[in-house]
Length: 146
Image (tube, rainbow, N blue to C red):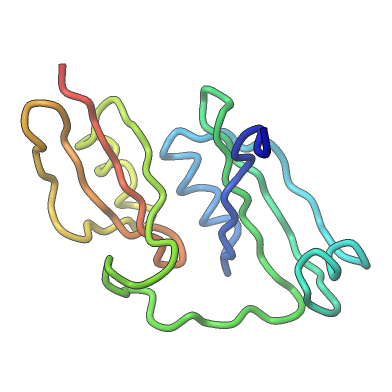
């Protein structure tokens, strides 16, 4: 077997505290924070002079993680407008299963979350929505209907 598991998804952010607050409000747990720099960071990323703060947040079941990174150097590069449409090439969303979709959206709004479209019902199985979270990343939410 070539792969054991997916370890984490990385997201570069400007405001680390706001990103952590958003994902903690979503229900993730802060696993830890650290500073990363030096030859290993440079070699892995292909960048020179890497110095960044990282935070790892995990889902309550412990199986999924997001690594949030705030680069001190080299300076982060904008990938364009943060309100890009959903059909842009590349990674476009991270999806989470939630118990109560409408309550989750309401709790995330004070943290800057905005619906991309609307909350929709998929047959009799799920309520779904996409919302824009920290740094413009699209976060998908799915509530399984009983």
